[in-house]
Length: 380
Image 1 (spheres, rainbow, N blue to C red):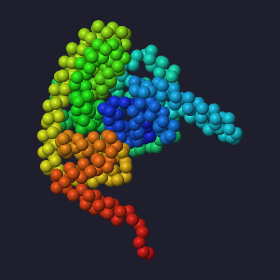
Image 2 (image 1 turned 45 degrees about the vertical axis):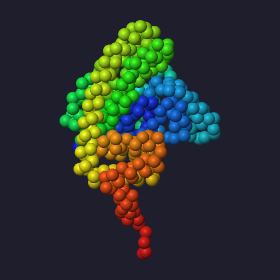
Image 3 (image 1 turned 135 degrees about the horizontal axis):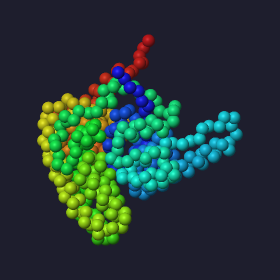
Image 4 (image 1 turned 90 degrees about the vertical axis):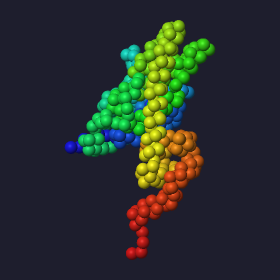
């Protein structure tokens, strides 16, 4: 049995890396092509200079928020549509209107109405209900947009929860894996959360001491958004209350929540630390036994570096991180995130050498084989 759905070219406007990974992972599973903007200014520039079928727009972003970006995009559409109407043409084109779905944590009914008035077409809350998101994408994207994709029915099944992830205190692992589908991506997001927000309660306390309420509120909102998608129910619940108090100007009540927030974060950080340590050991073991698989991944990474294909690199580096520990792959990822592919390539060659892999020779063989299967020239 097969099921069909449309696939689209989608612009994601989101500033939190872990949320970006989640969205890219789930959209890629459906066959969509994804481009990422990390603030509203970038989103507007992508819209002006490229083609997309729809936009997933986070509301709270730095430099320009999601509503400001939406207003700017709608203004640009109005200017274009007005110019097209004013030109002499026997058949006026349909007005341009790109569907925009807002993704936001803890949105209230009154805010939804305001978002719709600002030009948003639909609102999906965080943690993201992906079944609802996919249905909404289909509903609001006009007919004739995108292309049809037919996938085997097992692509639509929920993942098996018998993963390599153990029970983690403070984290609902079953809910998380059902949401993320990819345990490796989820593990990476957990480790990222731990490294960034281990001291978040103390940082928010310092911001409140400095009377920087707005930054403290934004930080609480970011942690709420991430902890919801990462299935950390206690952290999420405390942050919901904390953000509400700061929004209402109840700073003293907000301070009262910092101790339970610190305790909740300490619990999940300790769980993630144990998970990361297990992953380091398992990664070392896999590196010793999966040399051929690692060679294959490194060859494809080399090809992506040579062809400057950033969209192809993330799933490959995630695969590599599954087979080796983070200490081995960390520098490669660091340079990739900086888009310094030359240094990433050099670091990858050095790493391959430690495993006894001549990656440059392996890459030459791969490309030679690829060329020989595609070359159609020769003497007739």
